Length: 213
Image (tube, rainbow, N blue to C red):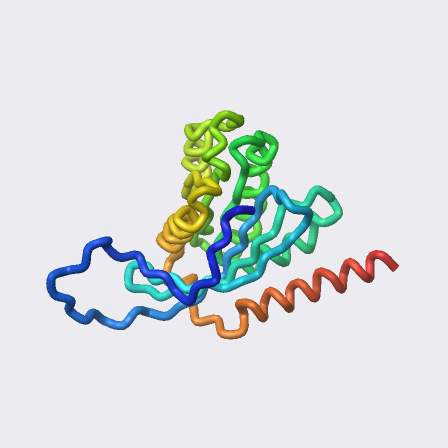
């Protein structure tokens, strides 16, 4: 999906120039968040599962990230996707600026996510929309303004990124996502991150095996 963060232990968002005198601040609040990254897959149906630390606004957040391509099969759009959505606290929806179809499916995806998550809570679901392949301007089918207007109408964050600046773009996206996640959703959910993904995947594939019998 072109939005993976390298497997570094941590990253901090601080000014480029150091202060003249560093004063130790309070220790960062250590929290966790489950992020589901959804978008048009360019390489088969590969899924990426990884964790990454970011320190944002005095909060040290361990993101558990489940990166899945959009399914082209309607059969998989049911309970397996619902299980992933229930696992996640926040969402990153990726489309290609060179593929209008990948952009046009976003409103329905976001409505589905909000119906599943906001029905359980009065808090807004943290969602960021990301236009990928910004470097391919000559192939652009979706304008930046269209992306911004869609995000504004659905109360989502919006970014455009390119493969040439993949790491910087991914940091920017996850930093923006962290700002949209309230502290009430950033809990110390030990055992619900990577283990939660494994448990959910086991349930999904167990169901598929049962359905195929």
